[in-house]
Image (cartoon, rainbow, N blue to C red; front, side, top):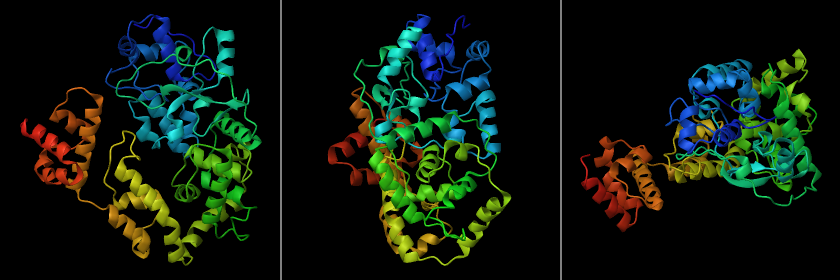
Length: 447
């Protein structure tokens, strides 16, 4: 029974709320607090959402506010669900409220940029929180992807030492004990500040969008050089290049790639940061993005561009040249593990290439540069499994604790039925000492 749950502060992240519960109730360990909050202790919550709560925790929250309000006002739901189609957005809220579901799978949450690995805070907000409430807390809007400035104080957000990602050894981290008392660094770049204000305004806006986000962005493109006056062709490459140059001067963590821009304009992708970057660069206001007024003629014109765009001849040489660097980046990230939340290397598939780059069926056959890159990263399943096993072995070895063959299998995700196929490739991808150690571990167990 949860007898006491503190009232959440304005814009407080649920992770911060639960961390304060851990401190206020005097729980002796993180494990004890999480056992009271979670339905299953093994299901570590995302730091951006509520997680799979116990019935007692749900009842304690509902004594303060409806569970749906807790999701809307104290998680990052407004970021990840905002630009989903209306039906999908409603279903996502229902699932998070009433079902056991994984937000990462629900929203297709992308890996974090290198500069966004930790929870962020504003030193002046922390001081004001202590004066008003007696303690600091983690603000949701400070954690928005691409947010680098506190809009209240116009100072740079600082990184804490608390990872923003979920961990295998999940621990609660009260902001009051995790924020350093440092002097704020004020931001003088007006564009950087205005972009932060824009991100926050979009985040705070009511989620009432009923029309496709591609149509909203089409409206923003209409009076720019990136769309023909007829509305029949978009100059996506020029748009991507100019947008990248613009945001490089602002210094945001991750700039939208051409492939993501293409997918967003076709509504195959609706990442918050990509949509916001496009809208801000095109000079749209937050209201124009979140509560647009579009005539039926504009909606019809946008819908017609998809048919016409697909019917127009394609300059395959230019398209191949422009897409090749994007494919190289994607292939390297998948192969090395940079594209995986756990850092685990994966096998690059043709289907994945088509999906991530927004290609249609068999288009890769018309793109020799891209085809050569894909072929260079092509490998058999046993080869991919061997690289995963080596990665798992090296990662476990770094932990400095004893481990066994079952630990390697569990971390790598490789089934023991394939071991005989895999072993010949271990020596090809590992140094002699590592290969010998893995072979010895295999020999010590019944596979």
